[in-house]
Amino acid sequence: MTAEGHLLFSIACAVFAKNAELTPVLAQGDWWHIVPSAILTCLLPDIDHPKSFLGSD
Image 1 (cartoon, rainbow, N blue to C red):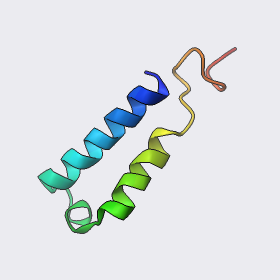
Image 2 (tube, rainbow, N blue to C red; image 1 turned 90 degrees about the horizontal axis):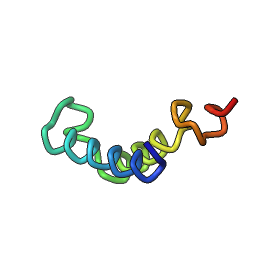
Image 3 (cartoon, helix red, strand yellow; image 1 turned 60 degrees about the vertical axis):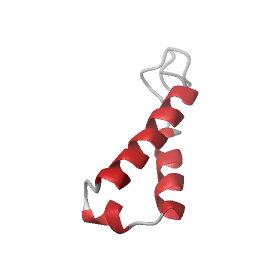
Image 4 (cartoon, one colour; image 1 turned 135 degrees about the vertical axis):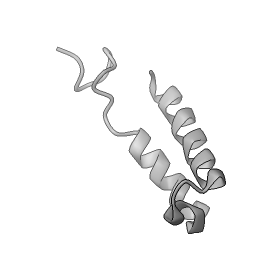
């Protein structure tokens, strides 16, 4: 998956997790913390992608 795919999937998962109230922390959390956290975690190095810096030989 590319960075764009990771970004969309991460945001979608964060929205679903908050709306479904999967954990009390997410249910009570505010969007100003959830969305930036999702963006930061999805932009971590993508080692399984062949064109990534860490995934290349």
